[in-house]
Length: 577
Ligand SMILES: [Zn+2]
Image (cartoon, rainbow, N blue to C red; front, side, top):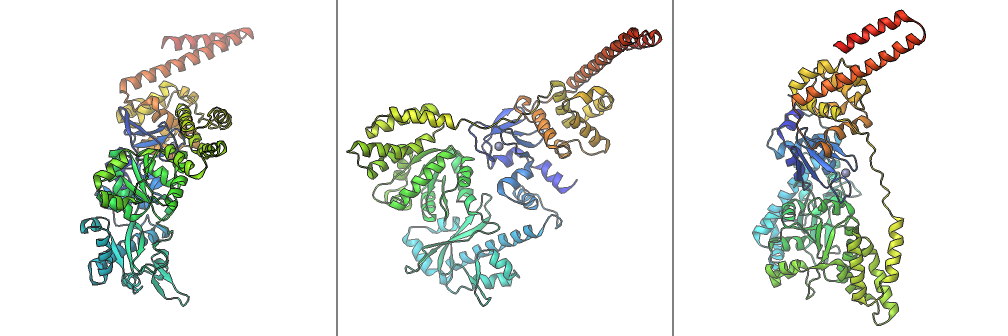
C-alpha cells in the first residue's frame, strides 16, 4: 500500500479534527461542529467516520485528514503528511519525492528555530545567562516554569546563531529567510536578537516558528523585539501559548486573553491554563477564529493602563464580529495579570476571572469616563459610543435587553435608539444564498452509500446496475458512471477516489448523498441495496412498457397492423417476465 493510503487508513479523522474543532456525535458514523473555515453559529460542518471525510455544507470546504491539516495549518501536502505521521508514531519513508523547494526551505527554517531554541536555553543556563537569570528571578519566574516555556537568552556578541547555522551548513539565504539573522551592507551576517531574554513562539502543533525577545538593557529602545514574518511565521494567525492552552480552553470552555509573554507565563503558572496572547500584533480576525474553534467564550484581561484600555476597546469589536461571548476583566491596583497573580495569589486571580463583567458594562464605564454624564448631550454621546458594540450582538432578544440595561445605566431614553436599530437590521439582512444542490432520490442515495463501503454489494449489484438504462436518468448518473469506471479499472472504490474523478457539481451531489445530515452516517445492508435494484428494474420495465404502448398506439393510428402486432407481442413478453 502507498504510504499516503497507509497513513489515511491508520489515523482516525475524528481524532485529527478534534484537535482543532469541538465535535459532537450526531449519528452512527457522523460528528458535527462549527466549521473552522468560515464563521458560523450553527454547525454545518460534518465529519463522516465511515468514509473518513469532512464536509461543510455552509462554505463547501471538504476533504480527508490530509486536506484538513493542510488547510487549517496552512501546510504543503508533504508537511501535512509528515505532521500526521510524526503525531501518530508512523515512520515516514525515506524519499524526497514530496518535497518541493518551498517545503525544503520551510523544513530548514523549522530546523534553525529548533537549533536556536536549544542554543538560547543553553545560554540561559550558562555563564553568559547570569543577567537574564537574575531578571527572571526578580519577576518571580521559577526554573520549572522557565523550562516549560523554553525561555532562553540571546548573547551580546550577535554572532552566536550565525556561527551555529554555519556549522550546520545552512546558506546565508536560508539564514536571512529565518528572520533570526540580518545582513549588513557589506554582506556580513549577524544575529537579530542580542542581549535579550528569549520567548519561543510555537504554532498550534507546537513547532517553534519565531521568537519574542525582551531587552535586558534598560537603555535599549525596543523593550520587546519579535521575529519578522517568515515562510513559517504568519503573525496574524498565531496566538502565543495556544498549543499548551488549547486543552485547558476546552476544559474551562473559555479563553483568557492577555497582552504579553510575561502575563501568559504568570497566569499559566498560577494554574489558569486557558491563557493566550496575540504576540506583537493587534488582535486579528484570524486569531479570533482560531480561539473560537476551541471555545466561544473569552475573558479579555489587558493591562490597566490607557494603552491596554484602548487595545481592549478595539479587541471587543473584533471579537463580537466573530460571534464571541466577551467578558472583560479590569484588575484593580493598577496591576497587570502577571503582577496580580504574584501579589494577590492564584485564588484571588481566579475569583476575579470568574466575576469578570460582560463587555458592555465595561464599555459603559469607559463612556462615563469619556463623556460628561451630568449633561443630556454627554449621556447621549456616551450611549452612541456604546452602540456599535451592542449592535454586533446577533441575538435580537439579548440585544434589546442590553440596550435597555445600558440606557438605564447611563440614564438615557432607549426608544429612539431602538428605532435606529430596526433600520440597521433591515439593511443588513442575511444575503447568503444557500447552496442549491438537487435532491438525491433515496434509491440513489442508498446505493451510493452502500457501494462505497460494502465489497459484497459491489460484487452483487454492480454487474446488474451497469446494464440498467434507467441509471442514465439518475440525478447522480455521472457519479455512477465514475464509480463503474473505477471498478472496471480495478481501482479501490472509496469516497476519495470517486470524488477526485468528478466535476464540481457532482462533487456537491456526492457529498449531499453520502455525507449530508439526513444520511446520518447510516450503514445500509445488502438487502436494502437489492431492494433498490429491484425498484430500479421495475421503473425500468414500467418506462419500457409505457414506451411500447405508445408505439403500439402510434402504429395502429398509422394503420401499420403488422408492426402493431409485433410490438404487442414484445409488450406481453415484457409483462410476463
Ligand atoms: Zn464552512
